[in-house]
Image 1 (cartoon, rainbow, N blue to C red):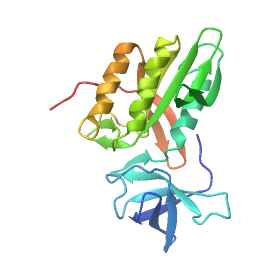
Image 2: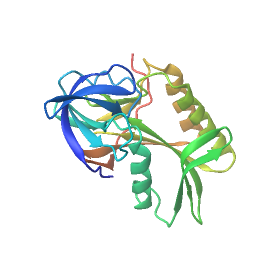
Image 3: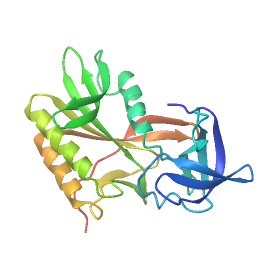
Image 4: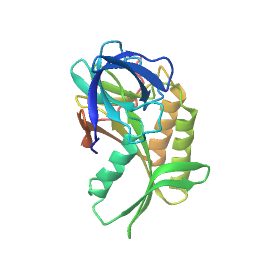
Length: 230
């Protein structure tokens, strides 16, 4: 996935979940944050960020923050892009070898899953989770408690029982990751439900991404460790 009309800026502060202040071309600019997560380890005053200019002239904010430089590593923090990147990646044949159709935002039961894949051989629901939290080469999810995430995993288990294939794809929005883990300290129930889903047959996948200031592409598999480390 490529972005258009990007610009480099310096992050100042984040008054609330939706907006931030940056210095762009020597001027303070109010921009939209395309990630409602905490991202406290990313959005530190003075860090370099990448903005995408909005195509909507009527918006109050003219730019979105899409990427941040953390210690020399670019991390994409656009929460809307993992689904698009996953669809592009799957349509390239990266997950399924046969000809498929991919339908975004497919409702099933009490949930709406990110992707629904169908072919002559399979019917599969795929839930996509973007991951931006990293520490010492370990990526973790979630960065805040997510009851909605737990509900989605439970619904994936139900899909399996009803005869569908079910996948949970963690799109790690950076490179240089050694492994993926549930964020046990933040949301224990999420980790426990992941283990339950794996035992039920839900396929858990984690992939890193090639990240450049105006580019994100799903790239290499990352090992998943579900064990809790004290």
